[in-house]
Image (cartoon, rainbow, N blue to C red; front, top):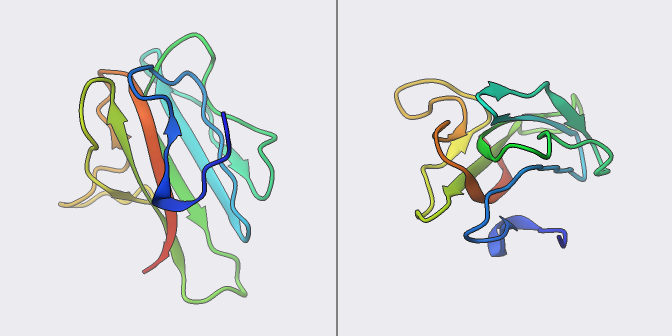
Length: 125
């Protein structure tokens, strides 16, 4: 699939569950993992290439967890802001990094049904 930049588009194919996901950033690094086949994958860390991806190619991804790693020389600190859409549904709530509190649960998705779209941006906090 083509590379996606910012929120003008999304990764995935509406109506078709995703089985693999990769991402990269221009500065700093990003680590991510996916939930598929009733378990979380290992963490994948990428900087400016798509060399590594998460998913096993057999099971649909049901959730995504992301953390942007701000380099020491980049201020203000930044976070990944992302969301998913489950097949046949609209967009879910926004998630920031893998924060857990009253507003965020640590990941995007629902663990029960396949996601078909994914959006992400890096924002200051």
